[in-house]
Image (cartoon, rainbow, N blue to C red; front, side, top):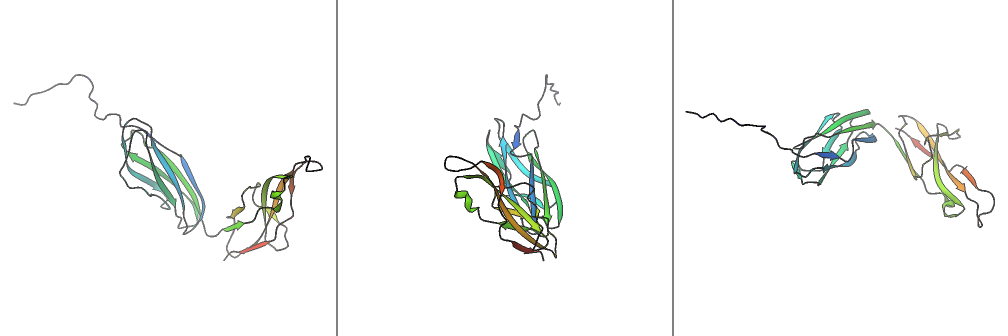
Amino acid sequence: MAALVFFAGEIRLWANAGTIKTSVASWDAGSVLVGSQNTTSITITNTSSLMVTVNSLSVYGDSAFFSCCVTLPKAIPPHGIMTFGVKFLPTTVGSASATLTIISTATNKPTVVLGGTGLEHLVSLTWGASSSTTDQCWQNFTYLVYVSSTPEGPYMLITGSNTQNLYYTDTNVVSGSTYYYVVAAMADYIASASCPGLSQYGLISTFSNQTVATIP
């Protein structure tokens, strides 16, 4: 004859399995040529004093996004970390989006929102620093990038605002067009005992030599 056993109080089927968090809540992969890729690293932190095992990194949405560079399942010790990669490899032109969900033994399921744009063409520009950067009277150098549809101009500013970088990527280009680019330096002249005259700010140099890009 089977005996009936009664338990008093609460029975917990699952103990606290810990919690985790990601280093970012979203990632903008930017503009990437179709067939090329952009990769980022994301860190998962075990914020609890219990072991957490990550079972899968599930991406829902555009197939241009996928996780990589880690072997699962992977255990994260208490207050430890785990790093994995996310790649954006567009196969079509246009915007793409997805959501990455972390499936683990933790009580929460953090997500990372992913976004990017596939491009058919782009133009990558680089240039050398202004020769005046070695002159102590000139400070706070930035650069302005301009474009024209004709070799004589007029030129239109395309950087939106000045940049300290010595490179710029123009993603607003179309097939069958030719673009003419020039760069100008902008800096402040700071008067001092060794720099005569008055201080002046936001002075813009003459244009650099012109470079041409023809989009196939």
